Structure formats: structure tokens, C-alpha cells
Image 1 (cartoon, rainbow, N blue to C red):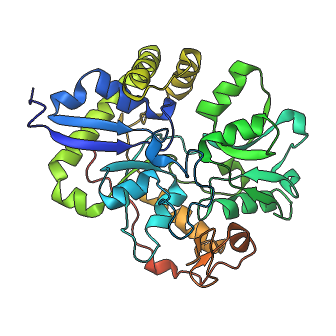
Image 2: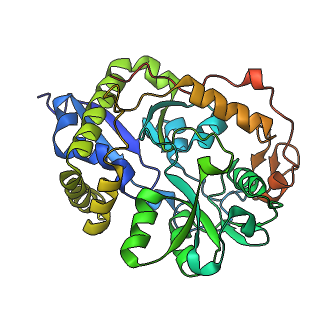
Length: 361
């Protein structure tokens, strides 16, 4: 094995506190796969203090002049404090269509299943379709395209798409729903969905692909193209070891869940409920590895192109960026974006390829 002093240092910024989507990283770390590949891998969780004001409670006016910067996993990759970060497919498109920002590329799909995320409401709410969200409160992650995707889902189901988009600190969104402060939010069924089952909380779930959205890969792993070009061997070694981690998680969900619980506590002082970890690992066991190719992470160009085309056809692919201090020119409020006051439509042909499989095993 390579000594840690000689190892290539890799930092991975998770999109959420440690959970089932991340099993492959924790299994690879636990099994020594990264060490064996000559890599010194650090995993960063959004529960860390550096995310105050975005994921965690902090400055409620996070983009006010002089406020601490609004830190996200991909903003860490953009600035160079992380090498890989997780994001949603719309987040990937956002980074590739934002002037002045690096065009971060998706380098792996964590799941082959593209329909495991859903808009959910408590069954007790009486919300039985996205159309019932008209006039209701949706707890939002405040992303550029998110509110408009939800709006299109409501409209696809026959509603007007007129709802209230609240933006609580991200790690508190699930509790807001459970406590009745919000009527709906967007979750992963393999985590919050499993947690709800364990707690006896009944949900009505509206999977994204079922309501007119040809969704791409969620979540996916992103990296800076300049870093990839300059560190191709390290990137390939990292993704190869990570692929082995996900294959091991698929083969032995119980052991993967155990690794997640132990390492989340050891490395992040974060408690993961063992029953939730096990339930999530079992839910995901057949969703990591392609049954035909036996490969992890590979993405289909058609999936991405159809998703980008849908964003464009739905008039979501516009220049407007979200901000709590909109200038009405380049930046807009979330309410503005949903109302169609979202800047100019981006020419479809100007959108670059947003992914690469070139670094996968």
C-alpha cells in the first residue's frame, strides 16, 4: 500500500448527512479500497459548521451583502476545497448554464434508478396528487430550477402550479414536513421514505418521472473539468475504488449499512439509526449496479439530452439565477422564477455536454 504521506488527497463533499445514497463511499473507506489505490480520501458532510446558513440554521439572509457565502457541495468543488461533490441533475445543468461559473461535469450516477426521488406529503394531509399542492406550502431547497420543476409536475397533474415556496434551512426540511409546517417537499424514498415507514408515518409520494419529467440521474457525482484533466489518474483510481464500494454494498447490504453507521459516528460524530441504514441499504441493493453490464456509475447521453431538452421545452432553461436580493436582470426571487420572470431563454444548442463517463472503470 502507498503511505498516506505519498497518497493523492481526495475530498468528497456529500449532498446530505451520511445516508444510503453514500454507501459506496463509506464501504470503500471501511474496506481500505481507497488506501489500496493510493488515495487519502476525506468525506465532508453538510452537517459540518462550514455549511451554516445553507444546510444548517445560521444567517437567514445568506446572500445579503457581507453575509457569509452560501456554501454547497458543488461550490466547494468550484473553489477547489473539494474534488468531487454530489448534486441533482438540475444542479448539474445549472452549473453548466451559469455565466462566470465553472462548468462542473457529472462523472458518475450513484444510482441506475432515476425515479427514487419524489415529492411527498403526509397521507393525513389529504393531498393525493400534485395538483392538490395549489395554494399549499412546499419546503424548497432553493435551487434554480427546483420550484419550476415542481410547478410543472403540479400542472401535469391538472393543477395551476400556484403554490408557496418556503426555504427553511435544508437539514430541517424533513422535520418541517413531519411537524406540519410544510405541506410537501422533495425527498429520496430510500432515506426519508424508509424513515417514514420505520416511524409509522404514512406518506403520499409522487415520483418525479411519473409526472411528465424525464428525470436524469439523481444523485450524481460532479467534478471540475480542469481538475479532472490535470489529475486523470487520481480521478480514475477514485472512481474505480468507489465503484468497488458500491458493488460491495449491492452484494451485502447489511455489512454496508454497518459500515455507514460506524464511519458516520467515527468520522463525522453523526448518529445514523442502524435500522434506517439497513432498510435503506436493502432498498438500494438492486439500484446501484447495472444488471446487464455489471457496471456502476455509467450514464446514457440520451438520458441527459432528453432531460435538458425537457427543461428547454418547458421554458425552464433561462438565464435567471435565484437570489434573496434579486436585481431583476440576472437574479430573481424564487417567486419571480415560478411566475416566468426568469431572464432570457437559453439557446438549446449553447448548452454544453454536462457529463462524462471517461473516468469510470
